[in-house]
Length: 442
Image (cartoon, rainbow, N blue to C red; front, side, top):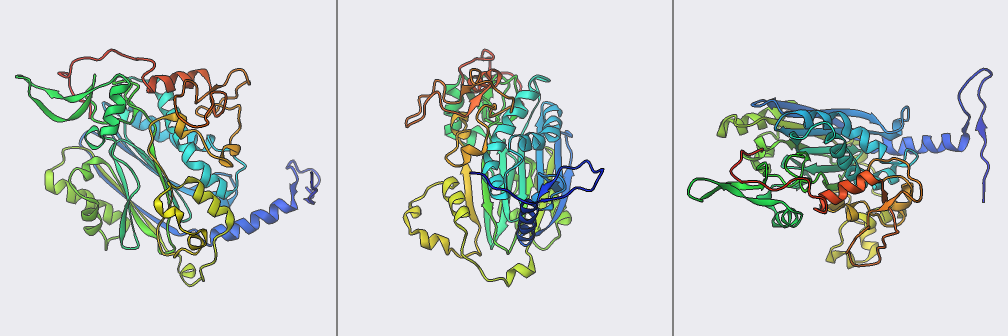
């Protein structure tokens, strides 16, 4: 079934294509709706350098569709490099572009938000894969934040953190990928061929944090670090939340802050300060307690409430957003409560939309209906190259996962990305293990 729409005529001699009137009207409605819930952002940054390997990305004014204000969003990133600054610089320069490339350009806002978590996974892996053709020994943590209206989506690898204070509560939007913080990560790396243990000293004693050998990296996930092993994966923990109209404050900091301060202390010592002064206060508080032992960087983003929205009556949620949320948020026992109760939830809360920290691409790139239909079938799910039907390799190839997954089901990978996936899972050993007596990386 097809429909016709009126078009706005182009003046004689103009080179632009006609735009259907229905499209223009729809854009206007969407623009008015999204503008009403786009809070003001204020950003502050402060850093004290020890090695000069911390890099930041601050871009509050982005548009996924150039010239369309309703497609605007903001992006912030922190990249804590080690063994050189190559990985941090490369990731800073390429990650956002890779995220946008992984999302079809014609999606509406709701579908864009739904597709964003998977796109961030694909972009992290592509950035890592591309960088490893340029260097072997450099690596970086990544904490990358996209803010679209009241929606915050955070993807992270490594041990930098993003925390949110809203409605009087603190929410952790990232995960620590240190071996000491996760036995599950230790088991994954060990099963993939890595050697995880503490540094051996004379006499056989073991000291310091758990590290992966060779290399001595204490992180289980990062971008780069090819010299350590492909089982140090770039697959990020991703969390997406929606703020209430009351807004909130984000703190994005490297481990130079979090090795000293808790989230509570960081917020308490800076609560009455504007973002720039708050970032400076947090860094100085950390350095004052233990000295400048590492690069110490802090980004503070204030998401300010729209006073006009605070007086607006709360309306019933639209069915589309209910589908979006129920499809992606982790299921809990409370999900058995009535659908009607969920539709009339108190708006003055932080709502969790999505959370996933699994390290395996076959799970992270797969999507439930209808989201999988947003992505083209014969496009590599990571590097976005076009595939012929006979070229694509399913992410479920050699999968032992239970359920209804089949090896001929998409999404599909090109040969190069399939080899990357196999190396991350320990099916392609990149290096032999070596002694724990070598120097540490991070």
